[in-house]
Image (tube, rainbow, N blue to C red):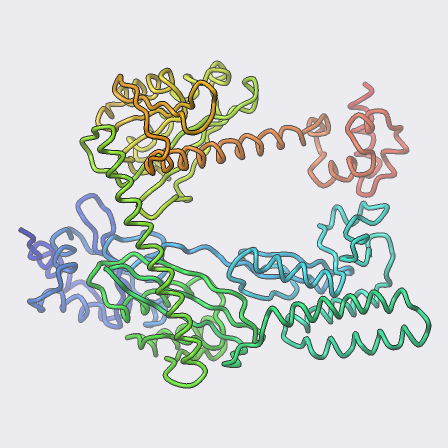
Amino acid sequence: MISSEIGKEVIKKELALIPKLPGVYKMINSKNEILYVGKAKNLPNRLKSYVSEKNHIIRTERMLSQTKKIEITTTSNESEALLLEANLIKKHKPKFNILLRDDKSFPFIFIGKEDKWPQIKRHRGKKEKKGFFFGPFASAGSANWTIKMIQKIFHLRVCDDTVFKNRERPCILYQIKRCSAPCVGFIEEKEYKQSVDDAIEFVSGKSRKIQKNLSQQMEKASEELDFEKATILRDRIKSLNIIQSSQRVNEANLVEADVIAGYKESGKTCIQVFFYRSKQNWGNQAFYPKHDAEENLSEILNSFVSQFYENKSVPASIILSENIREKDLIEKTLSKKEDKQINISVAKKGSKLKVINQAIKNAKDSLSRKLYESQNNKELFESVAKKFNLETNINLIEVYDNSHIQGTNSVGALITYGEEGFIKKRYRKFNIKIRENSQDDYGMIKEVLERRFKRALQEKDNYLTFPDLVLIDGGKGQYSSARSSLNELGLHDIPVIAIAKGKMRNSGNEVFFHNGKELKFEKNDPTLFFLQRIRDEAHRFAVSAHRAKRKKGMTSSLLDQIEGIGSIRKRALLNHFGSARAVESASLDEIQSVDGVEEKVAKKIYNFFHE
């Protein structure tokens, strides 16, 4: 029986020592794991409520029954406590908190206006560079599409500085009219700067003004009989019309806002975030926060908003589908963080309500698909367990594959599949370290599994929890190697299955090995298709890791062995001469003529090849 008295006694002992200040408290269990992170305007008053209240919800009862220790951190004010709470929840992922699981940074478009020849590119992470940032965009694809349109209209460069400085003739982007070739002086600096200014105004929502300017320039070029320039301007206006029609101005006239809507069903929640900037919809993203089934939607949204903006830029307006408990505190905290007024509101009527209802519909549809996939996966897991007579329930499968070419650039790969699909954050690649294993598939499997499961047994940093099933891409030999590796580590209870293609190496004739038996499925069996799919994903990941390693090896050269030759000088030399062999054949004067290679470095390079 669950007893909350254990945690209550821990709190009672600490109460007298806790200052009456705002701050954050952590509930910790006997394994020193953080169970829950909470905040309070007055720490003792908040913690007293755990002791005095008699009828806690089941989740709180369970948490208190496991609490063996409390740690507190005081802050200057409640806003600081809110930010610290969000940061700690993201860092430690306590099991009794509502968790925002998909917390990647969103892409922005960056234009480095302070450069002589500004570049446009996609950017993620901290905004440390000087220039203009536009975003966030919901996906890399959305940002890339906008960059492509900007290239078509304004002909800005996308190449990095090293390539730009070492070009002697324009690249293909100039030929297909997506760049004005500033690298070789095909456009004057003043004219290019004007294109940059126009691009910034365009992304800022002033496309009508840009269209008018382009039309005037086209008419002027026609009057001056410069038909080539007029044709280029006409094509740019066409591209501008395409992007205007595809990025319709939203009917709610939202200049800078995030629309956040949630939908809850069967104990699961989907939250949709729509990004509106410069009166345009820049895409949406779905999130599936982790929470107890009985948690209400308002509380889930409250936690989501405070965690979501902990490390992201905040728009002037946040429009929600539900009222949240800490609206005023979050509004005040985010306004202070961004040094501007942030308004959080709930859409109740008019065009904003239409936008929210559309977001709720998206959340509902996304959640329905997610629930269907989860149910489907549960049934497939049960089918696998039944087919192979497994004694354990399956919720998590790890799939392993190897990739190499005649023993070179050998890589082992691990992918993971759970009830909600592929779990990308649990993907791992293993560069084979033992030379004898690099040409031995059995040795590679043994090394990869030993490294992966030893880390878990030792609970080292970044270790993964155990799977319910290990699937190996291979035959009887690979199965035996994997089974013996796990047995040596004492992991006899983790089942292993090997999947091998048939004699003709074609899908559909797979043979499965498990516990000394060979098994086959009917060709149209959904469970076979499922196992093929996750096997193919492991193969794809292994091959991509191998190619990346091989490509890295191919880009290394004799130049890497010369002390003082970094990546920038190396690239400049290769761009100038074409290959390391050509550098070897070059004279001292020729080497010294390369930009960035001064006399002392040129002598070092020349002597390396000729001494």
